[in-house]
Length: 157
Image (tube, rainbow, N blue to C red; front, side, top):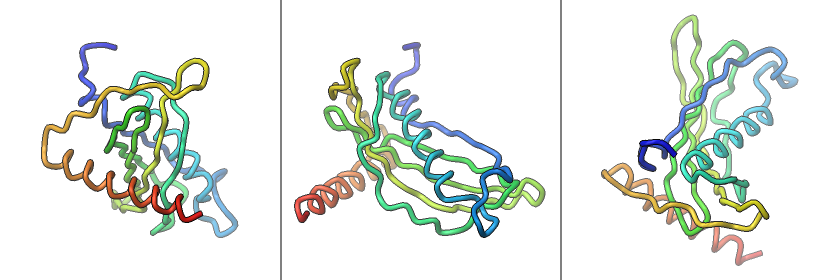
């Protein structure tokens, strides 16, 4: 790892232009394509932060609040919100920008739980999360609430 602290590595932004091969039967970008991109972004963010191999454990509900259209630039803003011993929550905010009008829309937000694994696929420790400001603290507290809700939901099954 270079001179960057883990705090500098907790955020990642990726963008991709939406092309005609990504459309669904309604002519909008297929939700499955966006889900695949979200998983890659979550992987990249978590792997970059932890410096480890990463696997996806879970995805909180993903609501596609607005359609995404061909020709729009979709940007994924990912942040590590929570770190446990081996797991991390990655929050991702998705925006779509019409490059002609420059109008930008927030299309959805979701949360991935990622786990660091060693070369044998066994969970391995990740660096602790440092919270330097109120935004970090708020995101951490909100992540704890989501984690507890997921835990309660899994107990009901």
